[in-house]
Length: 436
Ligand SMILES: *Cc1c(COP(=O)(O)O)cnc(C)c1O
Image (cartoon, rainbow, N blue to C red; front, side, top):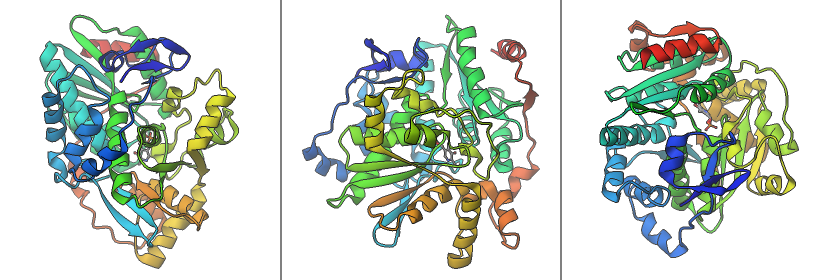
């Protein structure tokens, strides 16, 4: 498959080029120039495969420059801590809809499904070319823990993980900052997630690849992460397909996971609508519904991982400076957007507990809320993006009497390691340069 970027149709590139370039010159993002569709007759074969073999069949279409055997080994190695065949699991919600759990990886988030193969791929490259790799990661909660955990044992790789000070859940922070390794630096920025993301974009202009190292962003703007996420939408839509196309409801922040569902549709899988869910920070909702950009302050909510105003991956489909009708029509044909207010999330958490004795993570609850809004929904999948264990403090505020036996106590006796920084670009650059 070949790639280009919005507004720069003639600059066509291969996987390896876009992977190491991170961000194109026009500051949008790369996207396939043309999708290779999976033929319908191939579905019967795909249906019989386990998750690893299935992943390989999908991913090999997006990736060149890596021989097939190495690619297969990278995928295989990545999922062995996932209980092999059970990379994901699901339950029925009444007989017509489903709940898809993607959080079975080592850090209990869907992010592990893509981050671990990405770490193995980067380790493979760095050993092959004998260069260091310097990684930047901005996190709104779960990406940081997943990234630090995935890269912790790779000696040639250093990772700088940025989180917004006081704006992620306590357990998310503990998970991330208690992995103490020489190659991991946690930076806590006095600002919101967008600020961390903005700073990282600017580091790429200030620090360039050189003979000793490559720089890589492992945020969801990393293309390999997006395609590893495409796999589970392909796999699951095919698994439950029964003559009606499937809708996915996805709690959305940076729009990576939703974009992956869209790509899965583009390559031929039986998907109808992709429903993105946002919270009180409903920038994405407004872009999809009204085609305009809001200028609001970020609010702190019970769903911190989607407290985001710039849904970066949307830049693969539209250039924010030149929105046109044709592109928006295409978006509206495939996506539907929903926003769920904090109050509604809180009420629904209470409802689930009182009525069914069940507790879900608040992000996942946004998707449930959206499902309940339209009782005619069928063949619709609520995508769960995290476990409630991570948000135990905010859940306890809603349900003070619940006893939670989650096994997180050990996190509290471990030492945390992070450094607080203001948003001063030069101080940060100086720190990073002194460590690489
Ligand atoms: C990362 C994350 C999201 C948002 O995913 P995007 O790909 O950035 O849209 C949603 N929920 C949780 C719990 C997350 O950690």
